[in-house]
Figure 1 (cartoon, rainbow, N blue to C red):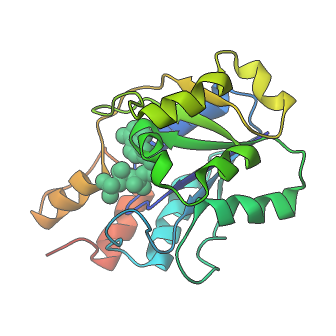
Figure 2: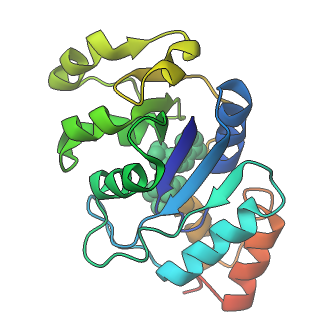
Length: 210
Ligand code: ATP
Protein backbone atom coordinates (compact mmCIF):
# COMPACT_ATOMS: atom_id res chain seq x y z
CA UNK A 1 0.00 0.00 0.00
CA UNK A 2 1.34 3.45 -0.85
CA UNK A 3 0.33 6.96 0.24
CA UNK A 4 -0.03 9.94 -2.07
CA UNK A 5 0.24 13.38 -0.50
CA UNK A 6 -0.66 16.11 -2.96
CA UNK A 7 -0.32 19.80 -2.28
CA UNK A 8 0.90 23.15 -3.39
CA UNK A 9 3.94 22.82 -1.11
CA UNK A 10 4.64 26.56 -1.40
CA UNK A 11 6.69 25.76 0.68
CA UNK A 12 6.53 22.24 2.18
CA UNK A 13 6.68 22.47 6.01
CA UNK A 14 6.58 20.41 9.21
CA UNK A 15 2.75 20.58 9.21
CA UNK A 16 2.95 18.30 6.14
CA UNK A 17 5.97 16.24 7.10
CA UNK A 18 5.34 15.28 10.73
CA UNK A 19 1.74 14.05 10.14
CA UNK A 20 2.98 12.18 7.03
CA UNK A 21 5.67 10.43 9.08
CA UNK A 22 3.06 9.42 11.65
CA UNK A 23 0.90 7.93 8.90
CA UNK A 24 3.91 6.11 7.45
CA UNK A 25 4.62 4.63 10.87
CA UNK A 26 1.01 4.00 11.89
CA UNK A 27 -0.48 2.56 8.69
CA UNK A 28 0.79 -0.31 6.57
CA UNK A 29 2.28 2.09 4.00
CA UNK A 30 5.53 1.19 2.27
CA UNK A 31 6.05 4.74 0.99
CA UNK A 32 4.49 8.19 0.76
CA UNK A 33 4.77 10.11 -2.47
CA UNK A 34 4.68 13.90 -2.19
CA UNK A 35 3.14 15.25 -5.40
CA UNK A 36 3.42 19.01 -5.89
CA UNK A 37 0.61 20.27 -8.11
CA UNK A 38 1.46 22.29 -11.19
CA UNK A 39 -1.52 24.56 -11.66
CA UNK A 40 -3.90 25.07 -8.77
CA UNK A 41 -7.56 24.38 -9.54
CA UNK A 42 -9.21 25.44 -6.28
CA UNK A 43 -7.02 28.30 -5.11
CA UNK A 44 -4.78 31.16 -6.10
CA UNK A 45 -1.65 30.15 -7.99
CA UNK A 46 1.51 29.39 -6.03
CA UNK A 47 4.21 32.03 -5.56
CA UNK A 48 7.20 29.76 -6.17
CA UNK A 49 7.59 28.11 -9.57
CA UNK A 50 6.83 24.43 -10.05
CA UNK A 51 10.55 23.69 -10.30
CA UNK A 52 11.25 25.55 -7.05
CA UNK A 53 8.44 23.76 -5.19
CA UNK A 54 9.67 20.40 -6.45
CA UNK A 55 13.21 21.26 -5.35
CA UNK A 56 11.89 22.12 -1.86
CA UNK A 57 9.95 18.83 -1.69
CA UNK A 58 13.11 16.97 -2.75
CA UNK A 59 15.16 18.76 -0.08
CA UNK A 60 12.50 17.93 2.54
CA UNK A 61 12.26 14.20 1.80
CA UNK A 62 16.00 13.63 1.34
CA UNK A 63 17.23 11.19 3.94
CA UNK A 64 13.79 10.08 5.13
CA UNK A 65 13.26 6.44 4.17
CA UNK A 66 9.79 5.92 2.66
CA UNK A 67 9.36 9.56 1.61
CA UNK A 68 9.49 10.11 -2.16
CA UNK A 69 9.14 13.25 -4.31
CA UNK A 70 6.92 12.55 -7.32
CA UNK A 71 6.97 15.07 -10.17
CA UNK A 72 4.20 13.56 -12.32
CA UNK A 73 1.90 16.59 -12.11
CA UNK A 74 4.71 18.89 -13.15
CA UNK A 75 5.25 16.83 -16.29
CA UNK A 76 1.62 17.34 -17.38
CA UNK A 77 0.27 20.50 -18.92
CA UNK A 78 -2.99 22.18 -17.99
CA UNK A 79 -4.82 22.09 -14.67
CA UNK A 80 -3.67 19.55 -12.06
CA UNK A 81 -6.60 17.31 -11.27
CA UNK A 82 -6.18 14.65 -8.59
CA UNK A 83 -8.26 12.35 -10.77
CA UNK A 84 -5.64 12.47 -13.55
CA UNK A 85 -2.83 11.99 -11.05
CA UNK A 86 -4.47 8.90 -9.60
CA UNK A 87 -5.32 7.54 -13.04
CA UNK A 88 -1.67 7.92 -14.03
CA UNK A 89 -0.54 6.19 -10.81
CA UNK A 90 -3.00 3.38 -11.45
CA UNK A 91 -1.65 2.99 -15.00
CA UNK A 92 1.86 2.69 -13.55
CA UNK A 93 1.17 0.58 -10.46
CA UNK A 94 -1.66 -1.60 -11.72
CA UNK A 95 -5.29 -1.83 -10.67
CA UNK A 96 -4.81 -3.84 -7.47
CA UNK A 97 -2.25 -1.99 -5.35
CA UNK A 98 -4.04 -0.16 -2.50
CA UNK A 99 -3.40 3.58 -2.75
CA UNK A 100 -4.21 6.06 0.03
CA UNK A 101 -4.76 9.70 -0.78
CA UNK A 102 -3.59 11.68 2.25
CA UNK A 103 -5.30 15.01 2.88
CA UNK A 104 -5.89 17.42 5.70
CA UNK A 105 -9.44 17.89 6.90
CA UNK A 106 -9.68 21.31 5.30
CA UNK A 107 -8.92 19.83 1.88
CA UNK A 108 -11.25 16.86 2.45
CA UNK A 109 -14.15 19.18 3.36
CA UNK A 110 -13.83 20.67 -0.14
CA UNK A 111 -14.02 17.26 -1.77
CA UNK A 112 -17.43 17.71 -3.47
CA UNK A 113 -15.92 20.56 -5.50
CA UNK A 114 -13.15 18.33 -6.92
CA UNK A 115 -13.23 17.15 -10.51
CA UNK A 116 -14.69 13.59 -10.65
CA UNK A 117 -14.46 13.24 -6.88
CA UNK A 118 -16.61 10.11 -6.70
CA UNK A 119 -14.39 8.43 -9.29
CA UNK A 120 -11.30 9.36 -7.29
CA UNK A 121 -12.80 7.46 -4.37
CA UNK A 122 -12.98 4.32 -6.47
CA UNK A 123 -9.33 4.66 -7.44
CA UNK A 124 -8.00 5.16 -3.90
CA UNK A 125 -8.74 5.30 -0.19
CA UNK A 126 -8.91 8.63 1.57
CA UNK A 127 -6.90 9.09 4.74
CA UNK A 128 -7.91 12.34 6.40
CA UNK A 129 -5.65 14.03 8.94
CA UNK A 130 -6.97 16.35 11.59
CA UNK A 131 -5.68 19.88 11.15
CA UNK A 132 -5.89 22.79 13.60
CA UNK A 133 -8.79 25.07 12.74
CA UNK A 134 -10.41 22.60 10.31
CA UNK A 135 -13.67 20.96 11.39
CA UNK A 136 -15.03 17.58 10.44
CA UNK A 137 -16.91 17.37 7.16
CA UNK A 138 -20.24 19.13 7.53
CA UNK A 139 -21.39 19.10 3.91
CA UNK A 140 -24.52 16.86 3.97
CA UNK A 141 -23.75 15.33 0.57
CA UNK A 142 -20.24 14.46 1.69
CA UNK A 143 -21.46 12.98 5.00
CA UNK A 144 -24.04 10.86 3.21
CA UNK A 145 -21.48 9.60 0.68
CA UNK A 146 -18.91 8.91 3.40
CA UNK A 147 -21.07 6.96 5.87
CA UNK A 148 -20.89 3.50 4.23
CA UNK A 149 -17.21 3.97 3.38
CA UNK A 150 -15.94 4.94 6.83
CA UNK A 151 -13.27 2.64 8.26
CA UNK A 152 -12.15 2.67 11.87
CA UNK A 153 -9.56 -0.09 11.58
CA UNK A 154 -6.58 0.71 9.31
CA UNK A 155 -6.18 -3.03 8.70
CA UNK A 156 -9.12 -2.96 6.26
CA UNK A 157 -7.35 -0.57 3.87
CA UNK A 158 -4.86 -3.05 2.33
CA UNK A 159 -7.71 -5.44 1.53
CA UNK A 160 -9.08 -3.34 -1.36
CA UNK A 161 -7.38 -1.00 -3.87
CA UNK A 162 -9.56 1.93 -2.76
CA UNK A 163 -13.01 3.10 -1.75
CA UNK A 164 -12.69 3.58 2.04
CA UNK A 165 -12.32 6.70 4.22
CA UNK A 166 -10.20 6.70 7.38
CA UNK A 167 -9.79 9.63 9.79
CA UNK A 168 -6.50 9.79 11.68
CA UNK A 169 -5.35 11.89 14.60
CA UNK A 170 -1.89 13.27 14.04
CA UNK A 171 0.22 15.70 16.03
CA UNK A 172 -1.53 19.04 15.65
CA UNK A 173 0.86 21.59 14.21
CA UNK A 174 -0.71 24.93 13.44
CA UNK A 175 1.64 25.65 10.56
CA UNK A 176 0.59 26.89 7.13
CA UNK A 177 2.55 27.82 4.03
CA UNK A 178 0.60 31.11 3.96
CA UNK A 179 1.88 32.08 7.42
CA UNK A 180 5.44 31.07 6.46
CA UNK A 181 5.33 33.24 3.32
CA UNK A 182 3.92 36.15 5.35
CA UNK A 183 6.74 35.89 7.90
CA UNK A 184 9.39 35.94 5.20
CA UNK A 185 7.70 38.92 3.52
CA UNK A 186 8.01 40.75 6.86
CA UNK A 187 11.71 39.91 7.01
CA UNK A 188 11.19 37.38 9.84
CA UNK A 189 12.78 33.94 9.89
CA UNK A 190 10.43 30.96 9.50
CA UNK A 191 13.03 28.81 11.26
CA UNK A 192 11.80 25.66 13.07
CA UNK A 193 8.58 25.57 11.00
CA UNK A 194 10.21 23.75 8.09
CA UNK A 195 13.32 21.67 7.38
CA UNK A 196 16.75 23.36 7.29
CA UNK A 197 17.32 22.26 3.70
CA UNK A 198 14.08 23.92 2.58
CA UNK A 199 14.92 27.10 4.46
CA UNK A 200 18.40 27.19 2.89
CA UNK A 201 16.80 26.85 -0.58
CA UNK A 202 14.33 29.67 0.13
CA UNK A 203 17.16 31.95 1.25
CA UNK A 204 19.36 31.04 -1.69
CA UNK A 205 16.59 31.75 -4.21
CA UNK A 206 15.31 34.86 -2.39
CA UNK A 207 11.81 33.35 -2.34
CA UNK A 208 8.76 35.05 -0.76
CA UNK A 209 10.50 38.38 -0.15
CA UNK A 210 8.44 41.44 -0.99
P1 ATP B 1 -1.36 27.40 2.00
O1 ATP B 1 -1.23 28.04 3.36
O2 ATP B 1 -0.50 28.04 0.94
O3 ATP B 1 -2.79 27.21 1.58
P2 ATP B 1 -0.91 24.79 3.22
O4 ATP B 1 0.04 25.02 4.32
O5 ATP B 1 -2.36 24.59 3.53
O6 ATP B 1 -0.73 25.93 2.10
P3 ATP B 1 -0.90 22.88 1.05
O7 ATP B 1 0.31 22.55 0.23
O8 ATP B 1 -1.95 23.68 0.40
O9 ATP B 1 -0.35 23.57 2.40
O10 ATP B 1 -1.54 21.58 1.69
C1 ATP B 1 -1.43 20.31 1.12
C2 ATP B 1 -2.14 19.32 2.00
O11 ATP B 1 -1.55 19.30 3.30
C3 ATP B 1 -3.63 19.58 2.24
O12 ATP B 1 -4.30 18.33 2.22
C4 ATP B 1 -3.67 20.19 3.63
O13 ATP B 1 -4.89 19.94 4.27
C5 ATP B 1 -2.52 19.47 4.31
N1 ATP B 1 -1.91 20.26 5.39
C6 ATP B 1 -1.24 21.43 5.24
N2 ATP B 1 -0.82 21.90 6.42
C7 ATP B 1 -1.22 21.01 7.36
C8 ATP B 1 -1.09 20.95 8.81
N3 ATP B 1 -0.46 21.93 9.49
N4 ATP B 1 -1.63 19.88 9.44
C9 ATP B 1 -2.30 18.91 8.73
N5 ATP B 1 -2.45 18.92 7.37
C10 ATP B 1 -1.93 19.95 6.69
